[in-house]
Image 1 (cartoon, one colour):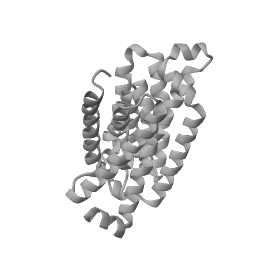
Image 2 (spheres, rainbow, N blue to C red):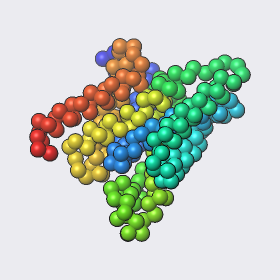
Image 3 (tube, rainbow, N blue to C red):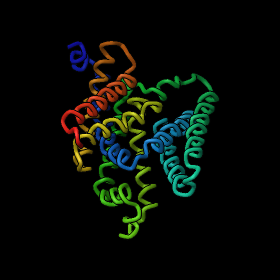
Image 4 (tube, rainbow, N blue to C red):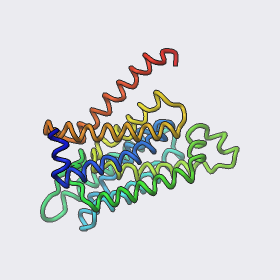
Length: 273
């Protein structure tokens, strides 16, 4: 009841809940592709490279989230190209991009004159600081993500399930793979304020992985993952408010519990599945 009373009384709590719901839309939709294609490590590389864009934008006095979008898209193209061209060394190269991106962001933030921004708000998220402008940006990103998925769903599925068959059908696999990573990058930006860069991969993967235990249709998986993500983020927000715990970490723990419960439920309901 304390949480619901805070929702009724405080605008920042309303903004925080709205951010949870907006992030869940993109998270559930794109998380399904990430799980199917098994590119969680790639998504993590993109997420951590975003800190470079945040730091550079902060250094030059621009909006940090605008820098995050640019850095995420650049990282998606770079990592996608690395994965396509150097498959034997992709783990090392993606890890290098991951670590160097974070280091560049830290250096720019450290060299910014005046007040040194608290890195933990970027690394672990601070949903209570979400503004109305942030919500508008999140809504725009959601609209872009959904539009791209509606327009190119078949190409994304062909690329995710069978690249060779997709090539035989005339699909430009390389283009749509990098395009998919760019959409993953936009989703990462959606989640930065919610759980931060360190924990973003868990929220992107776990709700979709839990949904995959019960449905076989990709469209249903997206819808269920979005719903589960909304439940996890809202529940995590409520628990963190009542217990005075970090909201991002609480949400990820809730997502982990949800995934574990989904695995156990599948074992019970579908022992031979």
